[in-house]
Image (cartoon, rainbow, N blue to C red; front, side, top):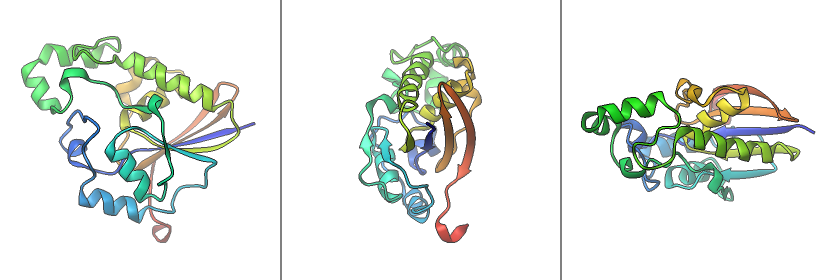
Length: 195
């Protein structure tokens, strides 16, 4: 029995462009919506589709033709507490030591939210549960969920979280069984005509 999971990052929006800690309410911008619509039909057929809670993931899923995707709470982005809605530059200027500690220590949560290690564990539990099922799952998820999934799939420490890039509107493919995952990352989504 082999499970295949395709993790798709949301298309571009202002929060992604400005490196702002999203509160889940920021919609896609016009370019992001157009890019996601152009990529519709580029994903493999799946037994089920899921989506991170939040507007940009839901709008990306809809534009990709996954309007029936079910919201999955376990795939929520990293909860950043009082930093929500601020840009990384703003927080870095106001709390440089807190940001440095947060980026260096996966157990740190100076924002009062969720430590990176907890996100990695939460996403890892979801992946382990999905691995017990056969078939393909497509999930439109926040970039930090992709980072956590890759760290888990590779058996990497939580500190590796910051070493994974997850650009907008790309796919990361995991396939595996019995606790062993293979990884294919950074696949750009393109519409069927784009090849």
